[in-house]
Image (cartoon, rainbow, N blue to C red; front, top):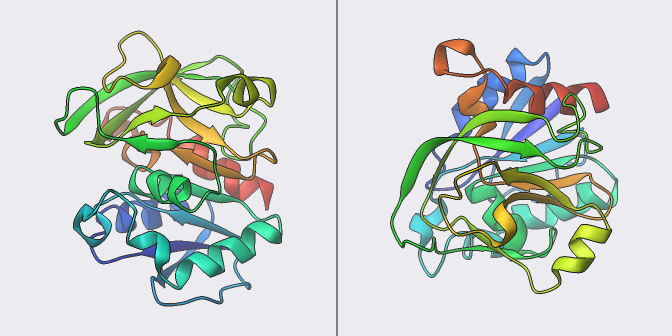
Length: 217
């Protein structure tokens, strides 16, 4: 099995994601922003960072690059796609998940460890957790406040994947910090599972996200 790691100018978590995929038992391959055909891959992860310096808004320029067509093709083939932080913002920009991740309520860069509730454990990425299990991962973003107009549909279709437990560091609607599409195969999360993949980092809860991808392929 082979999992692609998308790279943009400004990506800075790509190596961490690559390492964590291999730690989970998968085979990783870097895919650059200008490649539009990677149908041979079994899944894709869009890592965090500051693609194109977050000019205009986070994820806006990345959303019009050739690699987006390749990502959309994988979605049509029903292959897992995970977007982390900047990757989550990109998935919102291109409409593969509902809602947007916008400027924090307190408009400053926020970096801290947080407690999270796994609201939906039926996606490939969260299948190794129990429903409503509390896990620990870090956030690191200035534009992570989640908003969606139709919150009732999001709830009724079980598309809320992660919620902050306790403190809400960015003002997200109903503490939401991870959502998926209707199929559950496309998931956007603001916290960084790759930064919580080994106990020496402070938590290994995030490794289960990548084990989930590997096990689903």
